[in-house]
Length: 75
Image 1 (spheres, rainbow, N blue to C red):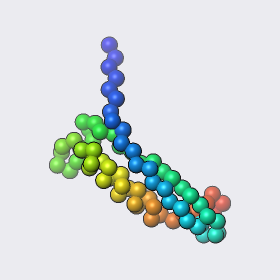
Image 2: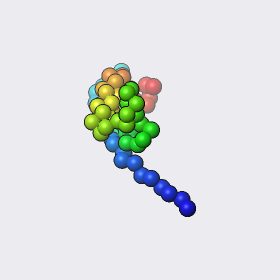
Image 3: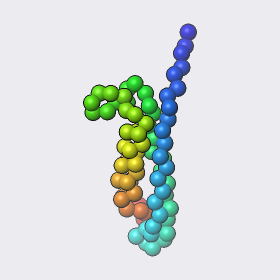
């Protein structure tokens, strides 16, 4: 017998806009996600709560937004 377990997927969509080094305006978006599952634990060893996961995703998005924006021709 096969048992499938579906875990809650928590997503955060981040969008950054700006000008590339060549002067073209660009818009990029990226979805950051994690699941709530028994293996996704915090530093104390407990399963992460939804709020902890959302906070981590926001921090990842902020780091990503600080990266320079380049178009395909300039990269």
